[in-house]
Length: 381
Image 1 (tube, rainbow, N blue to C red):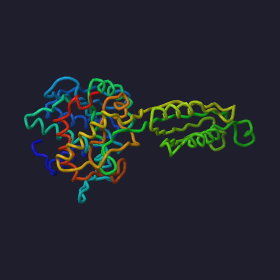
Image 2: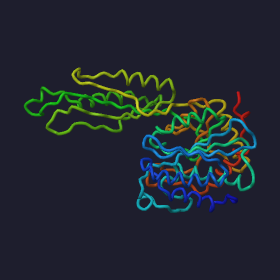
Image 3: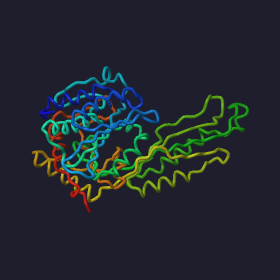
């Protein structure tokens, strides 16, 4: 891409949005990967594409040589969305309304992917390379917690000096310097069935036990410490005239630190049934570890802020994000990670998801300058 104009960048974003890619639709996500692979090849990248596992689509990696050798930059982006195929034709069509561009996944995070690739394409078209080698990793299952990708993400992160994440900016353009951890716990109660009429007293209700456990779990929420536990789904029973033998619930846990995560984990795993005749099982599901801002992350943010100033705009600041991203994995490993470098907008996972067209040029030029200027020395020591 020779010209980083609003029109050219908006068209680049539109091409990403035009390919709907809900996580569970493997063929759809792989069509998105095909598009991304074409862009990577055009930017001079060496391609590595791994077949999907666990029922997810392919992991796509592009490697671009730098002016220098050694550990480089890992750029993370995910190509799956939460919107089902058909959203573009119905609830959330592509449209421009003033400074807002709408479409499924445009904010989370196809806009960020598009501008990062535009910056790399601009370097290549200009006959230049990034200062450090850049590995671009497009993930197919981030919206599901990255179960098939986590090990690959962590392995790549360990080989790199810096991680940049193309997730959308938050709170009007703030970059993310730390993230809370996110865990999912699965509760299962097993009772004793009985006819709900004459034999009701012989039964032991799994649903009744689960109701008590739900109250105990949600009582662990501590807003002052930004620890939240939310029972988001619950199901049980087979018929209204039967004392239910089974009930299941999923708990979504948000924790600010590793210490808080260990505390909550211990409390959840120590839960016991109120009714001794009912069995309770608690298991840990998908987990994104929290990470804190380090001096190296602060150096990355300060460098980005200085570059933005040179480009004639000011960053909105930094933030600790409550939501998770694949940056959780890299930040928790201690690899300096700067997240939220994507587009400015709002409405992720909704039918009013949008980005601000006015952010495209400055955010793309910020990427460009980061690729040109980042060095291992910036985050050393």
